[in-house]
Length: 235
Image (cartoon, rainbow, N blue to C red; front, side, top):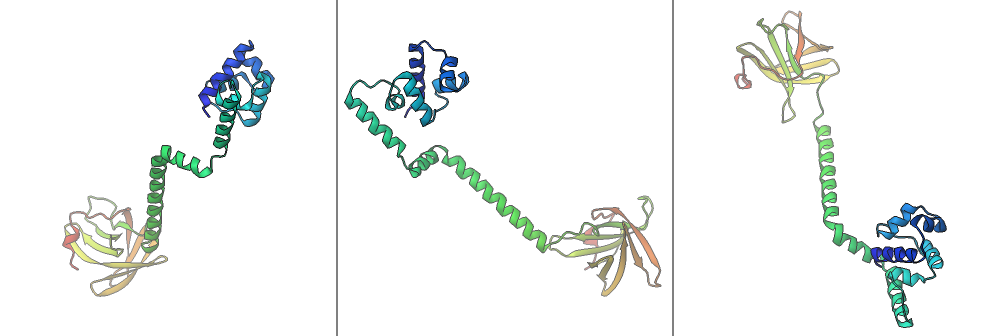
């Protein structure tokens, strides 16, 4: 059925009776805007509304669906068969017609959804295997004044998942190793030895050889190397 042709036929029938769109709408129980949408072919009336129109215009349902008056029985029968076939069109047929028109867009949206899903699953898996260390990681220094030559400790998680430990003074690399976290205790392994440091708030407390604690306040959330490079540290 041709929606535009049906709308033009409704407009023709309305004008033949001298009705305005508003008057036709009152007879059918709809607004004049709805009638205008029908006549412009922008909207298809339901089957019950078409039957009501047929009574108002004294035409058959088949004539409305055909968008013209049917002059003889042969035309009427052919139109009836055509409209019946259209009404009985299978859902599968309608689906394939929709795919012919919009299939490329649907396939693109589906592919994008699959990509987003795979990225989400991958990111979640990565976080499970490589948990974050935002509280501990960063740069700590005995002096918060960048112009003073303090001692630095860098704790950072590298690409291979290893938690790396660096200790240096400006222009002098001291040692390199790794660390593990257990609550507020940071266990550092470097130069063939292991020792514990305590993390309280944003300050790392490290014991020296005499058991005295040295405070290393955090100065950056990221690993920072002042006048040294990672390559300067011996394994």
